[in-house]
Amino acid sequence: MAERRKMIAGNWKMNGLREGGVTLAGSLAAKALGSPPSCDVVICPPTTLLAKIDRAFEASTIALGAQDCHAAEKGAHTGDVSAEMLRDAGCQFVIVGHSERRTDHGEDNAVVKAKASAAHRASVTAVICVGETGAQRDAGETLDVVGRQVAESLPAGADGANTVVAYEPVWAIGSGRTPTLDEIATVHQHIRSTLAQQCGPTADGMRVLYGGSVNASNANEILAVDAVDGALVGGASLKPDDFWQIIEAAAG
Image 1 (cartoon, rainbow, N blue to C red):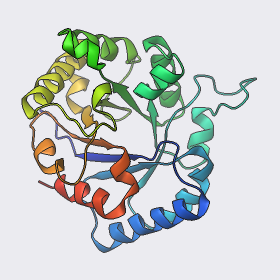
Image 2 (image 1 turned 180 degrees about the vertical axis):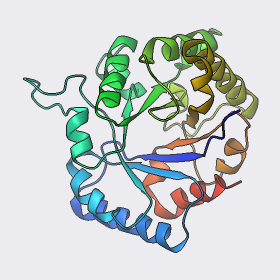
Image 3 (image 1 turned 120 degrees about the vertical axis):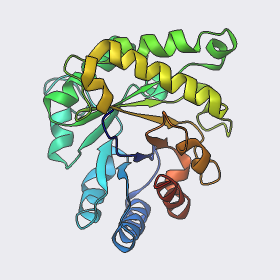
Image 4 (image 1 turned 90 degrees about the vertical axis):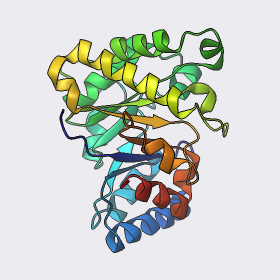
């Protein structure tokens, strides 16, 4: 089995103005310099803050990510940002297919796959999000839904160097609720099996993160699950002390 380094990614979503965002980034950079993390750390701020945050992270090991990209390299797409533009702004990662994009903007697996392909084209690592709704879980459809999302959202050539998968049950995001540890393990193992079917041996190096109400209190037990390679963190990533506790939990 390939050695997979744990990864903690913070998704700030639509939060943060310039002054507060730079202060938060500076606090995280200082923590990283004072106590270098033993896992990969990625921060995905709003697009308006990318340039400022990139400068704040210059001296640290924290990587910059974005929250979305367009599938095209350039063109008449008012309000959109290409993966190449994100790379030019300093991004090494980009989230695609987050449930809030799938729900609020009607993005299906084909759109997510195109965006992940665009990220690869621009040499940016795609963080592909998958997850079931509460209704789908109650109907016993979790594994079918998540497996289909993984299979249909993965572009050709996906491997551990250019792709991360994040399992975020939609009903757990921002709700304070999480699946049981056994449920998380079952879904992550199913994702790993699907990745192996889709990508062959290269899938062994692909990280599968858990997201959905990850916080400083539950991070230790979630990150200790064998099939979990890290976390995609929402609200807690806006609190530097809490976020750093999650990063420290990744050290085991």
